[in-house]
Length: 135
Image 1 (cartoon, rainbow, N blue to C red):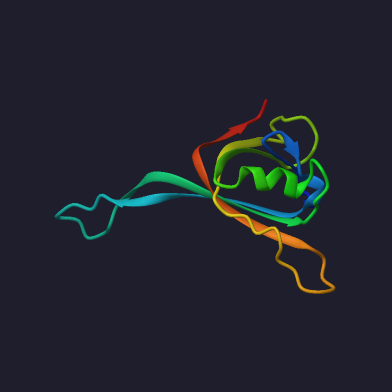
Image 2: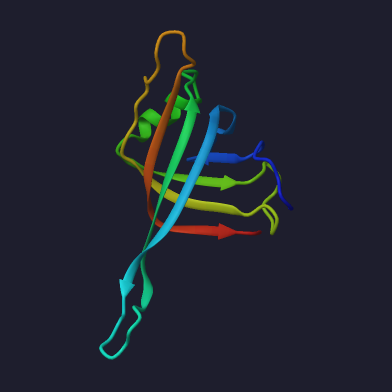
């Protein structure tokens, strides 16, 4: 896959495909910076330490059975499994999947003003390893 416009991400949470209710996704991964500088050097040196991540999902709210609220509310204060692929096509080298757990530690089912589209946003920390697969 070459450069592309993000129009077909596939995002599942505990096996439920929520792609058609999502307006944006942000998976951010980082690692701690551990200093290894020793006496006698004039430049700092570092290695990567523990890794962490966070996932932000922005939804158009939907209270229908099997949709946004019905999926997110039962996960509040539990662990959920997320799978993200750049397109809905089969996983491959040009369409890798990222699979990981998140701690669903927040949920705000109502966050709109009168006349606005009903939306919501969640930001959850990853829980354990983020795996990238190409097959």
